[in-house]
Image (cartoon, rainbow, N blue to C red):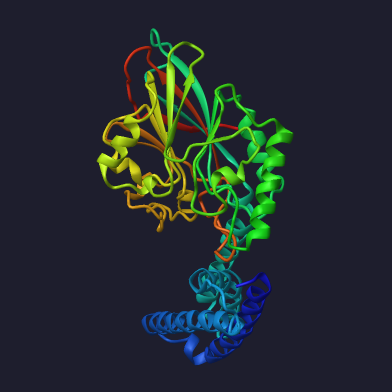
Length: 403
């Protein structure tokens, strides 16, 4: 699939959808608009369901037609989902307004008003999900460990960024790095998916190069260093940050001296180890880490936490994007992890180990549906309080801080 073929698929799809909607809307003559409430509701729901199924089939057909001579990967699933999202938020309000007009003409003013409100809500969600929230950057402040001021304890501030996942470096990515640096972190952790690879190697390698240039231009650094892990998309971590002041930890550990005395071990997991289910494997990896007074583990996916053989002071991960779409009173329908839904974002406690899962700086790109709803991008600032001896683990708390 190429960008040009994607646009062909989009054009074919919307032409077909507009034809379907025209036929559907014309079926609703005055006698149908005036049916009893039960019959009206049943007819509307059943026909909208049938229309949705036809539109789904049309999304598959349009994608395949646009790629009938393409020999590479077509990305049918992501593209059909993207097309369905466009139909819901573009043609959906148009259909609702058309039906509202039909009902108004038939004298069904209450039903017309309800349909018009539905059209407005769909349009509002469209604007928020596609144009507002993806460009937002919300700094969230977390505290982990015993209360500040505990005798012998010291606090370090960690900036946690994840899932920049962009095909090009622009103002949003620059603002994320600048905003993170404004909180003066002692340590910076990056947990994978830095650039998008779905649009081909020239795009991803240009984005990686631009990211390195941005890091150098901004002086993106911290007293205890910048550490990164492998992700699921884009070039390997070492390629993305080649020549930059970023240390990639791929099933490796690093030891840093803490400013208040003592030391901190940082273990970074590869893609496979980040989804590890065997505690013995993680146990051997942690046992090979240098001796230190305190320990944190960083990974792209957070699933490893269920197989951690020991508690650590803090675990950091990304991958979920917070679900990208959050339904009120339910949460994200899709989290892409095997952990319970509540671990898709924020700071939580897992059997005594605090784990912060970043909601990400970017979102799904390439051929996937590029939206965020009730789940804006996150800049994670974590104040980790470390006791002088041993470890005291607390799930801590979260608050949103202004920029």
